[in-house]
Length: 114
Image (cartoon, rainbow, N blue to C red; front, side):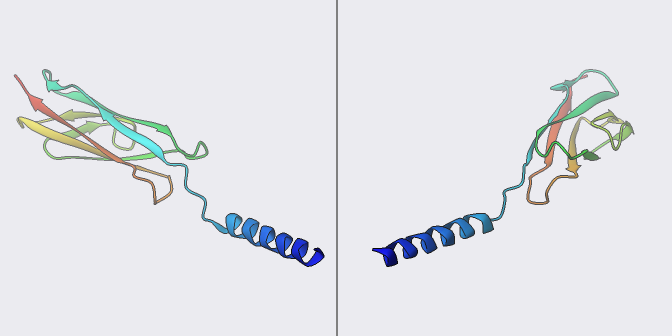
């Protein structure tokens, strides 16, 4: 019986070691971008919202747009876009600082109705 107890103890130790060796999943945030559904004023604002993720991270923000000009806010959660005559634009933000395995980009598209 003693041999079985030693074998059981070794198996339990091996399982505990294997469980501890599993890579820890990163604490990933959710990234969303909001803005006006329809451009009815020029310029207009678009905002990135980051929820969850590693609380020790200070997010960084890198914005790109498909048309127009970012008038202000690059590097912040909110940008002001002047579409400069475009009838449609998409704003995309890449949020940095989180684990590279996290999906941290989001986009928002707006159409001009003026």
